[in-house]
Length: 95
Image (cartoon, rainbow, N blue to C red; front, side):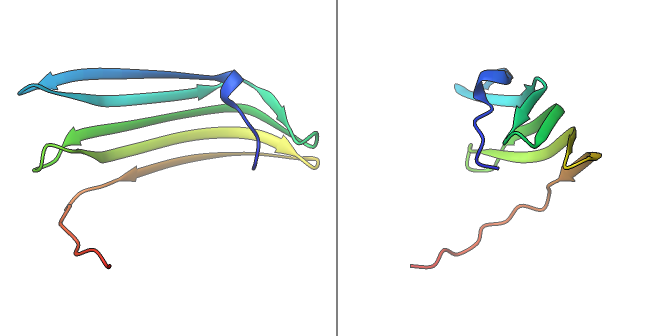
């Protein structure tokens, strides 16, 4: 939406350590109510991402949950999404 929400955002992370490797297991983002582009209002936004270490000791996304509500152009709406990820496998890159 080409709007900077950083002044209204709060981010929390839960960090653990395993075999000398730090991992942000849980990242939570919330955004306080705000107006966007004079015609829209974001009432609430909450996002939580869970990660785990992959086979090569790099973080991989396991689950992402997001809840959002707002209004614009006389309409109100909300959304709830949950995406889970599994069966990770290496993919050959293109050059």
